[in-house]
Length: 466
Image (cartoon, rainbow, N blue to C red):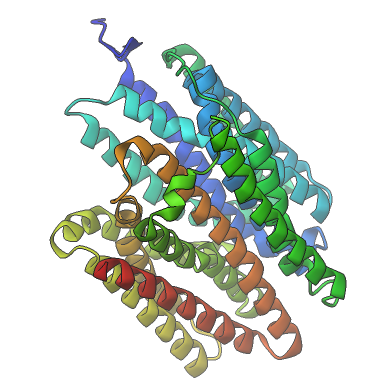
């Protein structure tokens, strides 16, 4: 075979390597959505409280968000191949642990470990693509990556419904985690044989203390939102949240000290003074606040209140995922001509879909799965218009030398927002459901989604005028 070498790396089998790393990214994407469909079944089987069910999703996102920058830097220090393989192995093992969990608290701890291992695996995917595809094939490779990313949502929703419904070997919801095991082992076997070794990047250092402080701070801020209802909002919960604010403030001081000592902090302190970038981060935060929390609330409402079976509930989201992919594919080109207006239009489409959901549920006591899927498809299209170009808009003013730090801050912000949304909006949904009704709870959640998206629009508009 003709050997190609780029930057000291063998690229002769790069399309096979692309298949391996994209398969890992696809597995990660599917896992994020497959769990949503299984959540109501998990709650019944493990006798889990609403707080524990929210935590199954939120703790995974917090672990992933706080460690993803560290995972990327470990790839620079040790090489992308060993860190990627270690991440896939860890993700596979912790998926097995999730499947074997016997209680809500055990599943939460297993999901924490799963999020941490995902933070090792995922950053190496883009790093590998950047390195192996530096020529004209780059756009094609990233196109394949983008399609896999979009289709993971549809596959996750459909697969979750199928696995829970089939109840293979009477495993029930456990099969949604077990399915990662054979795929993970296949990816490891192929990666060991095919992935090239990548030179290490000298001078890269870890900010482990920063990652730990940020993790504890976020737990103190988001944890009380998750478990507040279970302990009747005891006064000490608010003290924990105040401590969380103090810890986050201490984290920023710690990062400044790391930078002064010549280290590599988790966040680039200089970027905090870039007002346009910070507005972009706030826009991203409020956009993602209404992202996974939307799927969480709609899944619980459909299965618990409307009594839609898991298979149908999963299939309801498939048109949404497909319209998301369609919108993502052409939003970049539209953004070149219409700029930030495309993102604002996408938010408006989402708002229209939220209003349609409220109207549908208020007029029809038990709307059909087909009616819901059509309205959700509109939401997915709007979301695709925003999500695809949002990162490039936020990072547009960041200097090339700080692109990695900016991307890390963007990714961390997005996942923290996803976790905060599931915690805050999920807690409000369950509290109102318990005191009033599921319909009232859904309407309240829809209002919160709308307010979050409107706040995103406000920050985007300020960026556009700047």
